[in-house]
Image 1 (cartoon, helix red, strand yellow):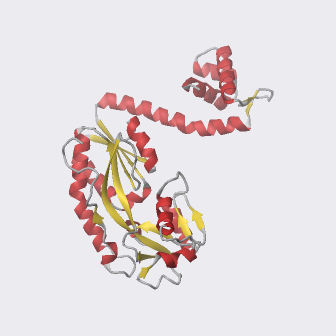
Image 2: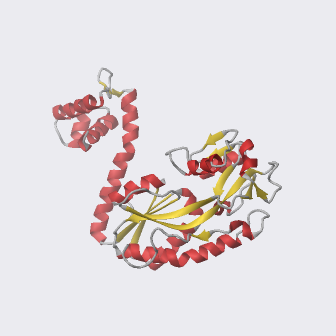
Image 3: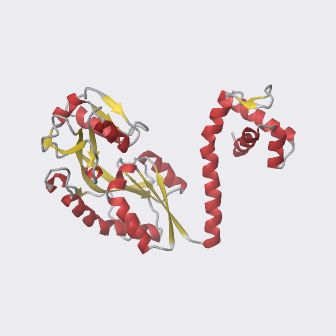
Length: 329
């Protein structure tokens, strides 16, 4: 399948007319019809009901159109972005992230970076950790932030800190009156994990904490995002384990409690292309190193419900995969 096949199909799908689609594409109708037939043969399905008047998309055709809309939209963004950068010659710096890191280090780092580098156009893309590896290799992003290590020789991973996990409990839960709860006590209550896909992911890190202790949660409910998981917790569906920074701000119906297991932590990992000597990346990494102590101070003084500040004893990682400095990686 080639890009032209998708482009031609979209023209037909949006006009529901081969003749009007041919006019839009500035080609003759016969070659357009042949291209659509080729696409259908490659997929092994019929995408267009030619007996209908006017023509209509089949069920498979509707699915194919909806799924490729994002692809075509992304390509248009790339085209527009390429032209824009050619016009103004601004440096572009792409940042990928998993949603949970937006509760801690990353927002302040982005704010400081944009103030210090006004000449740099910064782009943001929400990506799970495994998607970040592909995006880095393709140049869609220049740095990524996740909670899982990437096992790829072309990607450098720096563990910035190991953030304590907290138990998120329904406000009326029997354990909500305790300052510290044990994983053994949480297992019978049922568990809400996220994200549901892709796997392996953060959900598997959480499940592994129980499995290593021979524990099996009474039930496991999957959610796509952390905020959805917390909503299910508030509804009494189960409990969840979340990074400590996720407790910032009030959340009705949820009590965050410290875990008895000090080793229950989640890393915040910065990923970038190994050997990338771009000066803007070096400056970004140096800024992350400079900002990290202040972020840790914030975590140390953050109050989680009625718990003492010591509940959030986040620590910088003492065994970086690579040092954070201003030199080329």
